Image 1 (cartoon, helix red, strand yellow):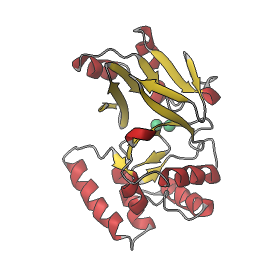
Image 2 (cartoon, rainbow, N blue to C red; image 1 turned 45 degrees about the horizontal axis):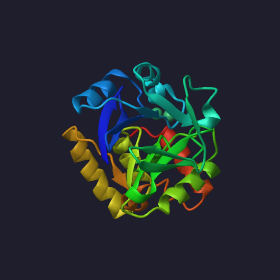
Image 3 (tube, rainbow, N blue to C red; image 1 turned 120 degrees about the vertical axis):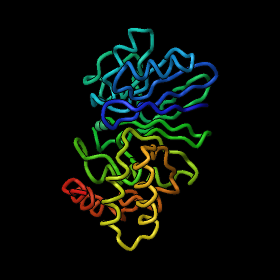
Image 4 (cartoon, rainbow, N blue to C red; image 1 turned 30 degrees about the horizontal axis):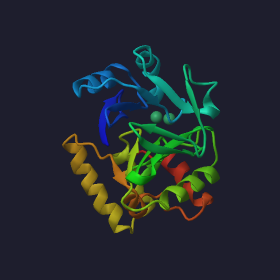
Length: 238
Ligand code: ZN
Ligand code: FE
């Protein structure tokens, strides 16, 4: 399986997942750069997988569907997403070229948000739920829901690669250093991430092991601490 990052809009990442001659576009916020990236690799987009209804994730889906792709996304957000062909919920499986992903229901950022976990490939696509050193804002859900999601992500094998929907890592790292000033792993990663972003390098994918060590939301001991940290980050001018 090959995964290609496609920067779209200001700070979104769409992802192309290629396996056994099939291509999925995950969260294509815009169509043109995603179609161009697929064409550059010689593939046509057979499927579109969507994590949640926000326009910066679904914005390119209808245009890509017009070129023949089938669209899969959260059943719980079917009323908010145009053109869904396949409705997904917790425990469903969906595959690309025979590589199978399990759907996780991870509400909090939006009420129906889903993630795609390739169980036997140590790979998960988390959309706007788990970010490198951060988590999604709680627009339609509760801190308790997001904390439950974080516990679930944290229980994955440490080498699991995490592909999220935005390049927010530097801002998240700056806040993390404030949330946990004694955490040497956070201080070291802030330096790494600062250097990477100065070179315009992407910081994604991350890994579950790295997030366990440095993500103040994944590390929150309970929903109350996650809620405090989420509110502090919302107000943080880093
Ligand atoms: Zn979002
Ligand atoms: Fe987003």
